[in-house]
Length: 443
Image (tube, rainbow, N blue to C red; front, top):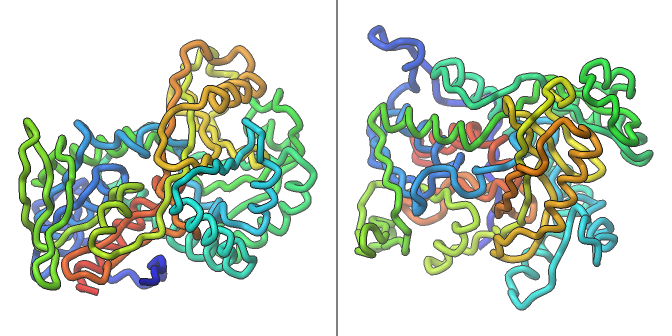
């Protein structure tokens, strides 16, 4: 079966917001569907919880099933925190094969491919190389850009209507240019972003430091691209806060339920089997099921004959306490040379990035963490408590094109919202809104 990402036309949204006379602005909702369903969302990361929220707002009865003891404890837990509309270009780019070759044997390389016995890794890698062709790369980037623009608008609307708090910062993202090659291509990139409707400005080092004085000691800074409409925020805190709102508005959240499989009766999925307390098995019924299980999506659906092109790509982060706020950035940063992102959440600083194609192994490589600590020490020396750094590694659910899978699965009653790679936080609200519209229209 061939899979393609379903990316919306940002101007063709069919759902409208309206005010109920008895509702406060924080309870503004979508126009209810004429025939509500019981929808079960599988997975309670940022994608699953936003999906559940939009479906609930549209008038459906919604249950979320999650194997962990709380929401947002997997890939959403400690990611880079950026709502990065200005970085729609996927890792699968014309430059990626050379980057991978140069990375062989280098412990601090941005992209590392580890050889092993998992044949799916090689199938995925071949598809990844195909997506690196210039035409396919441009097409993928354009589709991701459209969805990202829609998503940031939806996030702002959700924030305004709900009053949700998650250490968000609307100060934009500064893409740091630290080598001549990145600087020489910056003008073309700004022009390309403009063609997609994304604002960006090329800045000199002095302008960067005027905007963010904490960059005065940034090594090898040649310039930057400022994307003023981008944002940052704690995805884990957002997921927990939205889950609380979801439960308060009548949504049902079942944690501690390990999903075993889906039951198909005829042509339709009718139940999900899950383990609960003391290992007992439950058969839970619904009218429709939405798979938002990240890297677990492909394994769950393989017995049904659905071969999702999703494979884990491990990323790392460290979160450190800030001891001198004046010497630490407030603007979110992207180091284009190292493929690292830096975001500030109040009195905490997070640095995240890198990509290890190493199967489902979640163990933390100390060399990766040492590299992240060295970056913070170089940019903001003495301004953070590196001795108290919290290290983390998570598995990003990546398709070869880095475009997510959103929409009908081809099996009645089964829907997909998964495979967002490193852009799950950026694309969460737009993906959820898109899927809600498709479920409402039954398309």
